[in-house]
Structures are given as C-alpha cells and as structure tokens.
Length: 455
Image (tube, rainbow, N blue to C red; front, side, top):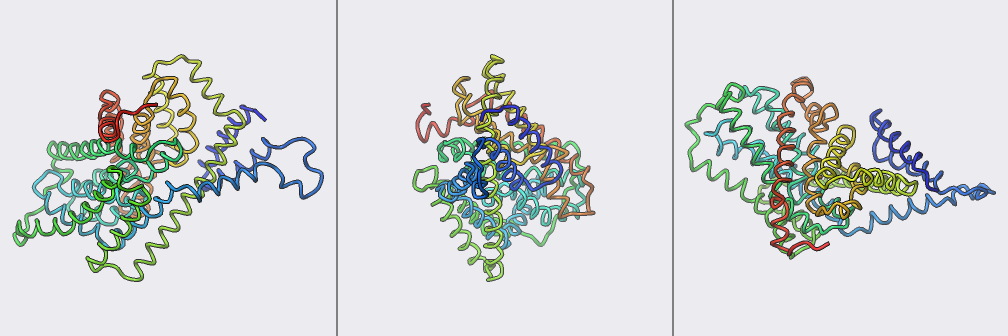
C-alpha cells in the first residue's frame, strides 16, 4: 500500500516523540509495527482473533531480528565494546592521561592537549561516545579545574575529543555504515584514517593557538622538580605505547587484509585483557562489570537496529524514500549542491537524533542517488562520518554536553558546556569543506591499498 503522505506523517511523529523523551529504539519498533500493520493490512483479512497476528509486519519484524543476529559484520560490535570497557575498568586510561600530561607540559594548554590525545586513543578502543566523555569528565575535568582552566574551555575539549571515536578506526559507526550501505568495512576504515587524524590534529592546533593568544584560559602548570625526564619517558612508554600498539595491531590487521573486523575485534578484546593483566588491574569484579556493560550496550545497539530497520522498511514500503528521492532529483542539482543539501539535512537531524538513527533511517534515502550524481560512496560516507560528529556537538540536543553535565552535576552549567563546544563545531564544518576540496584526504589510502574503486 503506497501512501507517501502517511510515510511523512510517520517520520514527523517519530521525531516529535523523540523530542518528548521517549526511548528511541522502542519508539522506532512501536511505530514500525503500528504503521506497518496499516501498510500491510488487506480488507477482509481478519475473520477470527487468530487472524489479528497474521499481518506481514510481524513476519518482517521477525526477519529483521534474525538478520541482526546473523550479520557477521555486527559481531565486531560487542568485541570492540568489551575491549574498550576492559581498558577503562583496568585504569589504563588514567595512566595514559597522566603520562601524556607530563610529556606535553611545555606546550600551551598541555593538559587540554593530553585530554584530546587520551580521548582520541581511548575512543578508538571504545567507540562509545558516552563512555569516553563520562570517563574523561571524571578524570580530566577535575585536573583541569584544579589547574585553573576556564570551565567552558575544559568542557569543550572533553566533549569534542570524546566524539572522535565514531570517526577514527576501528569505529563501530563505520561497521554499522558498512552493513547498511553494503560497502567494504576495510575500505571505510582506510578512508577514515586521514580524516580522523586531520580532525584530531586540527583540534590540537586550535587549542595551542587559542591558549597561546589567551594564556589565562589555561595557565601553565607549575614545574615539579621531582619529576625527571627519564621518569616522563618511562611513564609514556609503559602507558601510551602498549595501548597504541594494540590499536595499531587491530587496525593494521584489518587494513592489511589479515583479519575481518570481527576477527580483529576478537584480537583486540583479548589484547585488552592481556594489558589489564600486565598492569595487575584485572579483578573478577572489573571483569564482570566489563561483561555486563558490554552486554547492555550491545543489546541497546541491537534493538536500535531491529527498530530502525523495521521503521525504515515500512517507511520505504509506504513510498517515503521514493517521494524524497523524486523531490531531490526533480531539483536538477549539481553534484556539489546535492552534497551540500544532503549534509545540511543530516546536520539538522543531528539536533534531535543520534548517529545510529540517522544512519539507519535517513542515509539509505541518499544512497540510491549517489550514482545519479556521480558521487563516490566512500567519499560520501566520510562526509557523513564527519557530519555525525556534529550530532553530539550541536546545541540544544548535544548529547556529549549532557553526558558531561551528568557526571559533573553542579560543577558546571550546561550553557558553559555549550559555549565551550561551539568552536569545535566550526572546526568539524571546516574539515568537511577541506575534504570536499581535496577528496584525496579520504580516497587516497583506500585506493592505494585496495585499488581504485570501481562502481
């Protein structure tokens, strides 16, 4: 039953309910079933009570649930999550931040730089923005506050750094994107390496320049004569090097074609356990906590998939995807205009929605149009990946700000956090413009490793 008007109403109602605070996964599921029942209903199909459940929507829901469970690519998600939670619970991140802070002590805004580097490294091991922002809010913010860093500046560093994990490989978001768009996760990882490094580097450069111009926002720490250069090097080697090597080993095995994302994730999970044992930080309690948090986060992601796929299937069946595609194609846009329009829509959707709903529901609307506009799907994926950074940084629904406010409570006002993250929002947009001007930032490495992409 094609009914585009109902599809658009379904979409608007979903966004409205999300803004009211309803759980996203179960809202998607409930609306998918409710509107799907209408879409698949045929007159006279219900003669007895048992016929009520003979509607095709229930078969679709069952198939989507089974598809999520049997998807080999998605197996990597709980393994990467477990790796991140083990690293977090074993206090390896604490050591990493302390050693990086000591190593960068002569740079302007040294503590902020250490926080950004720690966020970047830990984000790649975790992939969950909430976990990174929460942990760094408990670890780095008090240290910066004690050093008389300005509150909004310290908060912006943590919020921006915490979002890097959805871009820098091995990213869970890229695994999800590969499953949705039917692209190679290996190529996506390769395409994300330089954009991720570029964005993290631009954050650090911004911090250095801003503190250099206004030292009062991040006073230089007092020199501790008891700390020798040898101690700094030793702390850096024993904390930064092992975790970085583990991440490079995981990513290298994927890019080198030696392992699938799931196999590399399993290796990463085992490596996280080994590091925790070597640091003598692995206890039965911490292991149980890591397993519980992994199961909890994985269940959330899986229900989001089931709900989003059911919602998207019904939306498409009602003609919603076709209506939007026809509207965009009828505008006879140039390729650059199409890219700007698509990214603007995704940017605006980042206000009420998280990256998972945007990817699963809205990105498939644009994917069929890429061939018509001659856009490389991997280049488009990197624009989307950069753009999704803004979904966590755009007030008033900047989730990273709420994560940080949740752990700091009365230590900082929400408006101060919003004020602190706005410059990083501008940096993300500038990075997108830069990558559009120089597509090789995203496409050179995958083309070099796997050959030029052929549609």
